[in-house]
Each structure stands twice: as C-alpha cells, then as structure tokens.
Length: 294
Image 1 (cartoon, rainbow, N blue to C red):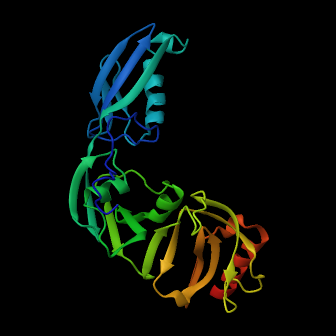
Image 2 (image 1 turned 90 degrees about the vertical axis):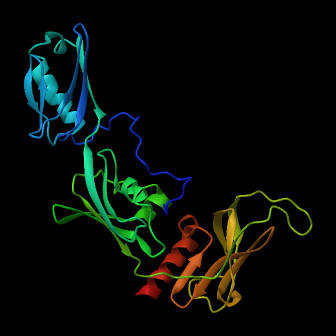
Image 3 (image 1 turned 135 degrees about the vertical axis):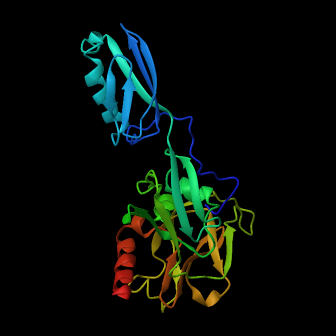
C-alpha cells in the first residue's frame, strides 16, 4: 500500500461493469439488443445526463446504477421491440469507456495533488496512484469529502486483516481524499521469526502450528490474572514475535522450541494465540483486558 511495485491497486477496465456503478455524464455505454430482434448502440451520456438512442429518443440515465439504468432502458425499448415482453428479445448494457474524474488527494501520501482517472476507481486505487502513503500516515482514518461534506471514513486495517472492503467506495468528480498523520503508534523493538520445523533433537513439527498448547506465564501477568498456569490456548501461526526486551515477555509455549505467546508493557498487551477460539479461558482473557481499560 506504500507504492509497492508488486502490489497494484490500479483499477482494471477489462472487467464487467458492476451493477452498483453509478452512471454519469461522459460515460460511453454499449447497449446490445439480441434475440428475436437485434440492434446495437454506442452512446455517450450527455452533460445533461441523457443517452440519445436512434428511433427511441433521449433517455435520462444520470445518477442511476447500471441495474436501474437497464430497467429504465427496457421500459422504453419494449415499446419498439415487442419481443422484450415475451422474453424473445433481450437487452444488455455495459459501460464501454467510463467517464473521467478529477480527484484531489492531500495529506500523508507520497505524491499529493489533483488526478484524472476513470470512474471505475475507488479510494484505494486513488491512494495507490498518488504513490501510496508515507511512513507517518494513518491507516485507521482516511477521509473522503464530497461537496464539502464528509461522506466516508476508511479503516484500511479492516481490509488488510479481515478482507472487509465495504468502505472502499467508488469516487465521484471533485472528491477530496485526506490522509492524515497517525495519532498513536506503539513500537516494540525485536524480530519476527519463523517457527522452527525441528527441535534440538531433530524431531519434525508441522508448520503452521495449529492446535492447543499450554502457556507458562509470569505470576505478575495482568492479562492472565485468575487463570491457572499451564492452561491451554488455541494457536494458528507460522511466525513469532521475539522482543528485544525479554522482560516484557509474559507468556511462552513450547512447540519445537520455546515460543513467545504474550507480551505486556505498560498499557500494551499482545498475544500470539487466539482468545476468541480458546473457549472459556479466552473469554477470561477478554474480561481481564476490558477491566484493564476500564
């Protein structure tokens, strides 16, 4: 997301037009009529939002989704092509050449400025085109303004960790994207290491490590408060975090070798296992965490 040449968020124009695409002035539409009757239209939506079809006249499609535009076109075309009502003639509509947009991108991106690109582009596409984010950028609160109003706030972590792209909406002309600086950042010095597939006796272990393992935690751990030592928690991982400061390690487990299972430093708590998959003990972890932040 930071301008990586191996990861592209550029829009792909060689894809079917999504049904929720909003038609606007400048879109070039391809309209196919096939079946009992056949015809083909290429028409550009006028600045007033009309598609002018030969022998049909102007049809206002501005602001309609592709699905709704098809419904409106059929309501006009079925007066000429009678086979439409009899399911003998069919209509297909697609955006052959999407309209051009002008979008402003400011803040913590590598190449802030005003960009022109197709209406198929989304917020992620736009940030990629602007060179990606800087090291000081937030990924939790990227804002989109339209007509001087905030209409969307994007949390990119939801996309990166959960695949949730619902906030990655398509852009409109004169949109403004603001990428602000991060507000809080916690740095734990150390390394991320792959879990060894063999122990010191050359015994093989499956990677990724998946399953229940006992955790040996320190007696002064806040996150394991009230939980019996050597209790089992559920793991799914191939790597482990090894902090430079060994004093912040609050729990370890054994799988091929000793693995860091949790760290605690001031008001920072992090675990390597999955509390949400660890039954009642996992719920106790959540309860302890809630009590700590309250």
